[in-house]
Amino acid sequence: MPDLKAVESYLAPRIDGFRGPVRAQKTATGQSNPTYILTTPAGKYVLRQKPPGTLLKSAHAVEREFRVMQALQGSDVPVPQTYFLCEDDSVLGAPFFVMSFVEGRNFVDPRLKGCSVGDRARVYDAMNAGLAALHSVDVDAAGLSDYGPSGNYFARQISRWTKQYRASETGTIPEMDALITWLEGHIPPDEGRVTLVHGDWRIDNLLFDDSGALVAVLDWELSTLGNPLADLGAQLMQWAMPVGAEGRGLDGVDRAALGIPSDREYVETYARRAGLADVPDMDFPLAFSFFRMGAILQGVKKRALDGNASNREQGLRLGSFVGLFAQKGLETVKAG
Image (tube, rainbow, N blue to C red; front, side, top):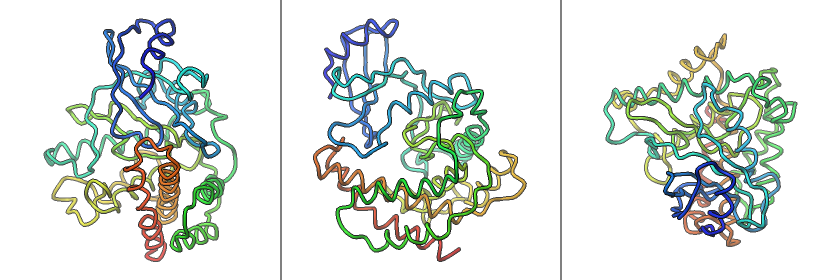
């Protein structure tokens, strides 16, 4: 928990209207970057901070999260209002930023339990429209033309996450090694379409109002410029996982009965909204998404073992899924 007196004294003169006393509640999510809801007499805010300890290079970039959300203010992509970024470690021990608290429904389980068939259909359609809107952002006009390096997005991402995975490796996982080898040998040519990419587009990183409209896109830590199919692949990846609190997927679910589109229907709708001439082949983006999530969870496990995790028990539990993600990635390429 952050030092609330330090939070109050530091933010009061820097954020208009901010005043104490301040109460803080740690969110259940935010495994990568600890996230706190601050309650003050003036209202609620959200503080998102880098975790303590030695971090992998380029990981936990709260500075980038702040920048991209600030750039998207007033756009067709709904984001919380950004207030202040502190890069001074001496204040709370690590860089952090403060944004507005957005009221909305957050769905961890993509089955959307408790919702009607019509409500589910509206939420999924809003999620699809939000993704197309994200990939339609004019990055030059938003001041984000330098937000990511040039070159083949998948090539550089595979290189980056392979290095991250090796740096956090705690044991050999043959399926992960095999998936890395396959991906490195099947990188598609760069077609030149570059958009803003969220990097972790999943329903649990979104907020919706009671009508099913998308009201906020959260967790921009992995955002960059690149191939938009990576975001679509991340969406399909999550749905391929087992149902329940751990997998948070839709594997084996009768989607039509629940009002949830099939993978094919969702991709076709996205392609239409994004103005694509053809429905894209999603095998490589999907396999890549399984690999990257496996690498991310390996980092979570390593931080848990090192004592730097936001939630050690949950970190170790999530780390146990690395092999499953790798296996799912291999199944994708074998089926394709």
